[in-house]
Length: 489
Image (cartoon, rainbow, N blue to C red; front, side):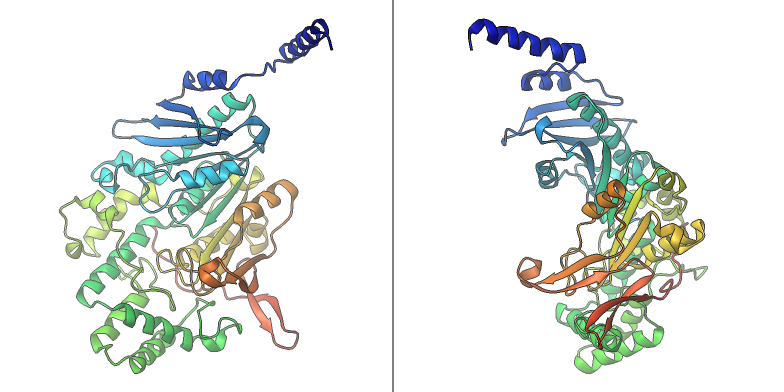
């Protein structure tokens, strides 16, 4: 090819791009565009190519109100690697920092991904006496992250994402449900794993356990004995792979609790009458000191006592850094705490009509061995969603809830390889593939080795049973409710 024909061809190519409004930009031009992008209530602080040379990282700070300081990062794979999807990622615990690992993984899979520190940097004490931080942590930071990230995506790629998804666990699950309830237009599909959505009652449960365990501590050995006793007492109701190893059916009675305490004491004579009294309180959960109303349920049988306390920063937010945790009562103090924080932090609205009408799909999971975010509040919430929509079938048409046998907060003796919820949500939303069952796996080496067994998981209120005659798992009707509702007001 001669130079003349080469330049004529290049000119024709460029004129075609110009005519269609699709002039290709060089990487440095895209960086300049992003650096000069104006965003509401905030400032872009950094725009750079990352070390892989395949994506652009944008960092920004949002200040929607005095006392609010929200950090956000958006990771953008190059246009030829973008899957045309936006993914919002949740945080964990009290947040206050950004996890680059999650962003790196998501962008490597082709997502334009974003996350936020939820406005609690540099540590949870930023929320002491600061309602703007309460609002950010509750819902505002996640929504504003979503809005500005989509603006950046449009500026970078020249078009909107075809679909937008949110995925988070624990605090990230709180973020997920807040989005579905408050901002149904933000996302097409949402994966909410072990969601800490019933936030103020959950932390009241942490405080209740903290106060009890200060008075009557348990050693790690005693904790293990109590867990083993629960597994043994509940074994007759289990499928074969679970019997004596973990509790997959979380429903229990006061008689079950007494049986667990009695068996634990037979197994370990160091468990005293005081330990027995403490266990009754721990398994039954906090109640209001004046009204007797249940605030939250107790530690699930078969889960760790040791993991079920701490996380008391919310009480500092309300009562100050110097307040002694043992001095907080479950009467007037609890009323004050709840009144101040619940409107911001609790994601408890069962009316998901707007999310459902726009075609949104939602999957939520909880583990039966999770004492950090127990299953009770999510069962209660899903029951109220069923009530709002009038039937299990209607709720299931867009929202599935799976109780995962033996799963603790981040692992457990049961299923330690939970299903990929994001993939299931995407298939449901984009292809109409309803996730009638999800496959859970248990593997050796803490979930990273050989798969020992698999179990289908069916959406609540169904449960997984074992047919000994056919040696197969089956879906059966499960109990509804699994306990009294928690106090959310």
